[in-house]
Amino acid sequence: MTESISRQRYQFYDLHPETADFRADVIQGLSADAPAILPKYFYDEAGSHLFAQICTTEEYYPTRTEVGIIRDNIDEIVVTLGKQCLLIEPGSGDSYKVRLLLDALRPIAYLPMDISRLYLQAEAQKLAAEFSWLNVHAVCNDFTRNLELPYKVKSTRKIAFFPGSTIGNFSPDQALNVLQEMGAMVGTDGGVLIGVDLQKDSQILHAAYNDKAGYTAQFNKNLLSRMNRELGADFNPDYFKHDAFFNAQQHRIEMHLLSETNQQVHIDEHVFSFEKGRSILTEYSYKYTVEHFQQLAEKAGFERIKTWVDTEQLFSVHYLQRI
Ligand code: AVJ
Image (tube, rainbow, N blue to C red):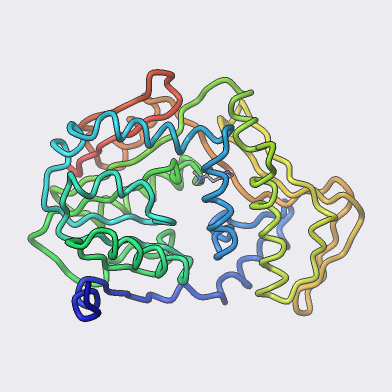
């Protein structure tokens, strides 16, 4: 592949998700009565790599199960989606799952969107090199704030690919909003192929967020190191403990960082006191039934066209069409 061809096929659009947001959001989140940090901040370069490692563990079933569902149903999925679309992936990460679709789907272009700039560039360039026919238009953005496309395309059908149950990070109310925004992005005739983790035995869930190798704990604690690196905070990651459990009433996994001692942490002129046992909420991961997710999708203005589930009913993949 020559340099000039790759230049034409690979485009990078920077919509500048600012680190200023990180500082302001952290200070606001840690000042709240129930301290919390938004899960999107897990994904700096180190965090994105750690997440990829979580996905390879025995305990973390979502990735391999969703990959199995897509592989087993690829023909039907491609017929359902239709060829020649503009394929957009908000929160694309390592673009691993889209590789299962590309050869069969042959989209006009693939638009990975991610908040992690260097990681996105590296992964998108790898993909462009691997699929010599594919146009890759990488967009660095924060899709929770802005789902605008970097250019206008009227005539092409747009499909959003939203795998991995990322939708589970949002409360049901927020998830409704995210789905509505995606509906606006893909427009009439557009669609969304979305992966949603299902409610199941709480032991399976618990294990998935407490892997023995400790990648999930590292991923959680990387937030502390990231605040030190980027905000000049003085967290000692050894003084916080990874805590993840299933909240059955709310149908969600909760991840926290528990203070193991009475301590104070500084960011700029702000002082944050954590008593022993006090937690910082870092993530919710909601689990749905197929029926509940379908209701949510309909409320957001989609018609559910098809749902695929694995034989153990661990995970679901839905194709939703914008009405
Ligand atoms: C990418 C948000 C779907 O909630 O399962 C994995 C992130 N957090 N292990 C999830 C995650 C801890 C993951 N999502």
